Length: 383
Image 1 (cartoon, rainbow, N blue to C red):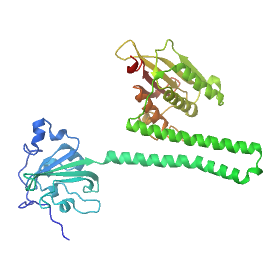
Image 2 (image 1 turned 135 degrees about the horizontal axis):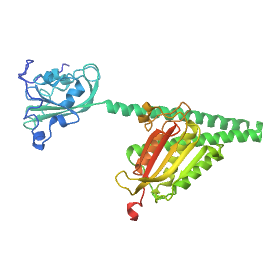
Image 3 (image 1 turned 180 degrees about the horizontal axis):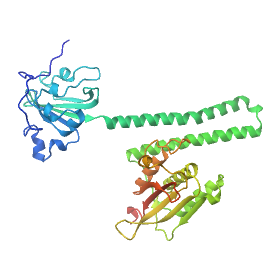
């Protein structure tokens, strides 16, 4: 079956007289509102009743790489040659001027520009009457780069999760199957060792699932913060004791708490999560003494205390300057010593959910230095 062409009745391929980037009558509503087409974030292309382009805004120029002067006055199908993903010419398929008289729009879909660049395109047909001739064709063009980045991020997350789950689940399955099949052949010490390994791997899976839930809540803005009075100095002390109990020398840690500290209302579990991640990174990836400074934080505009700051620094090689702007992104890893690369992304989300800030830099000893600040004061429902 043949398809109709998109050329309007009587339209010719000859170039019409040059017009301004958007003619005064192209979109009267924009003019009435004081909004210029070049202010729009998406590409905007408008064709008149004869199928010639009368508007080609700055975003359309950027997305299509077609100068406005080469589009204005040309037939729409020449100024904006689009194809669907199967290589068919979109304007011939949709035939806005000669197609169904009751059609008023084309839904958004993925189309290809010359050269294969993918864009999101939707169209609106402006008619003088419900079934009258098309007076304007208004086309919206959106770049798909941001969506592709999101899709790549989701794909990386799935791949990371699959990789991180495979190892502990394989271990759990192997040890439990072996114990069930040959329980009597093992000594008590061997059984204990295998069960401890299963327990550790199960904890690893639990932590990964908790990270995924945190990421989901952070991305959707649903991370709940249940504020309670928090003794941040005592919380730091508990984490230091846990590292010492696991084999780290006590003299590797230097804790300095400046008193008096303001009252801090925060979610204790999430603050523990932040401290645990920062201290574990300093111990695992850093070297030398790990220094933790806890002190009141003054507002940059006021002399009174605005919050509590916690600084964790080490004396290791530090973070390269070119990597510092990527530290708090997903999947960033400071070394090749394992991990999902999600921890610091979650830390930033937790701190910001409290209304605080977190920064990274180079410490006095040359290593990495992380500093987060939490605002103080009781929550609004208690004031």
